[in-house]
Image (cartoon, rainbow, N blue to C red; front, side, top):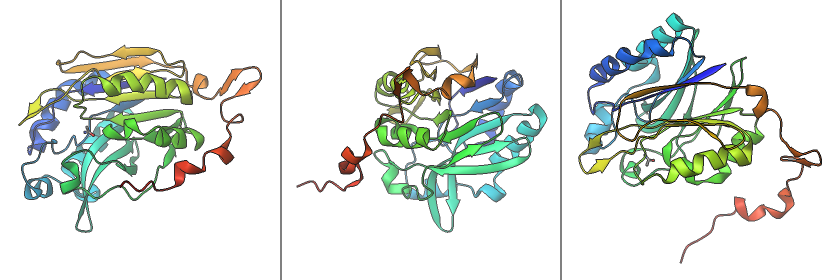
Length: 268
Ligand code: ACM
C-alpha cells in the first residue's frame, strides 16, 4: 500500500482558497491509499480572536471542506485524514477527521492544546479512537500531541498500525526528531503532514515526515516548499511487535510499575 501527505499553507479564513491549493496537488495522490493533510486545514491556525476561530470553524455535517474531501475520496478511492476546525454544540475542537471512499468515518479531537489554542478550543473529549479501514488500522494525533509518549503508546496498544499526524509545527525541528522515535518504540508507521509559511508572528517548520516501524525516515519534505510526499509501505512490519525472538514489545511491558502515568501531578 501507499501513503502520502500534502505539505502546504492553508489560507487563514478562506476555505475556498485552501481547497484550490489542495486541488492543484491532490490528483498526484490518486495512486495512494491514505493521504494526510495538515492541522486546522479548513481554517488556518493563528487566529486573532475567538470570533475569527468561531467564524472559520465548521460542523462536520455541513462543512464545505468535508464535502470537497468526500468527493476526492470517492473519485480516487482514497482515505484522507485532515486537520479540522470543528464546531459542535457551541464548542470548538482542534480535530482530525477520517474520510473514505464511502464518506465520513470518524474523528479525533486534540487532547493537548498548544499556546493560544487554549483560548479557542476545548480539549479533546473523544479519547483515542482507532479505525479499521480494512487495509490497516488508523490512529490519529494532532501536532503538539507529539510530545506525549503516552498517546502514541495507547494508539499502538489499541492496534493502530499507521498513526496519521496533521500538524502546524512551530518549535524548530523537535517533533521531526521525535516522530521516527515514536515509530520505532511503538513499531508503527507515522505520517506527519506539517504546514509551511507564516501567519502573523508564527512560522511553521515543514519537514513533513513518513517514518517506519524501524524508526527510519522514509521520506521528509523540505522546510519551506509546497510538496506532495508519497511512499510505499509494508504494513505487516507494523504488526510484528517482536524486538528479539524473546522480547515482545507489548508482552514485556510492566504496567504494574506504571501507575504514576495515570495520576495527576499537582504543580506547586
Ligand atoms: C501545535 O500544536 N500546533 C504546535
